[in-house]
Amino acid sequence: MSRDDTPQTSFAHPRYWPTWLGIGAMHVVAWLPWRLKLWIGRAIGLAAWRFVKRRRHITETNIRLCFPELDEAQQSRLVRETFVANGIGVVETATGWCRDPEHLRHRVTFLGQEHRARLQVEGKGALILGVHFSTLDLGAALHALYFRADAVQRPHDNPLFDRFMGRARAPYFDVVLDRHDLRGVVRRIKAGHAVWYSPDQDFGRDASVFAPFFGIPAATVRMTSRIARMTGAPVIPLIFHRNPDDRTYTLEYLPPLENFPSGDDLADATRINAVIEAAIRKHPEQYLWLHRRFKTRPEGEVGFY
Image (tube, rainbow, N blue to C red; front, top):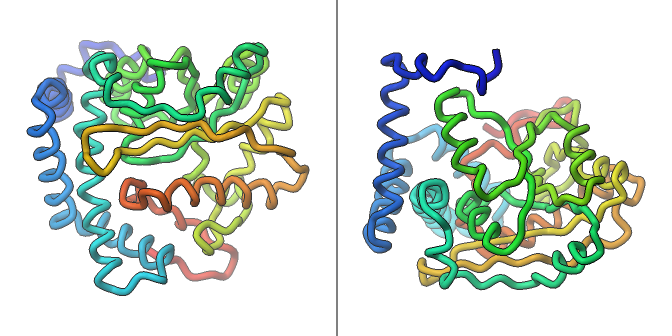
């Protein structure tokens, strides 16, 4: 039985009560005044920074590897800022999932719309190159005010939260595809749709090549160039971030990648990582450094975490 087929009555089991409580809290937080939401987000981030030691260790390791030019105090400050930004990301996700994003349109600056609009006029599908920023889900909701897209995602391990997440994302994605559904992605792009795909996580050795990411060999999926090759569709990077005022957001489409794919998986993965790295460096604290980006290592190399 798939997650979608799970009888809703089963979610009354006590093991799901904490999840229901979390879902209820997200609905409440989504409607709070902006300043209060920011305060709650910062409090969540600081609490996680102080008490979630495993994630703090992962973040510290990532920051140390990726920003060797920073001294120890600067790295520590960036770790703390990362937790704060991702805490705010929790309340931003609640806002994106539980409220109509139309009420935030006045807070959005959207650059590079002409790159996507041109593809729409031409009736072409596209592979949207996304990044795992803390603003991911709110960014997707804000993006839907301007353009429609499909999305690729990993199902959540908690079936109740997975159903909630799927229904919350449904209003701003036309179709949500499983990350393993290559045929579905290819079919949708060939039909003229844009599919949002974020390749900046470690999916293991079998699906990847080791390409530099912040100067560190990182398991990088070959799927991006494979999809582009199978569909002939352009790959168009989409970046988004919370502005320093903590009240407004910037979304930006970059020009479609030229001469991509090249036929060389390593060269293509290196190029994709360079695009993502450049986007991260603009607001490094807003990236999801809490995940083990360098989990899979080349043969014989000792793990970082």
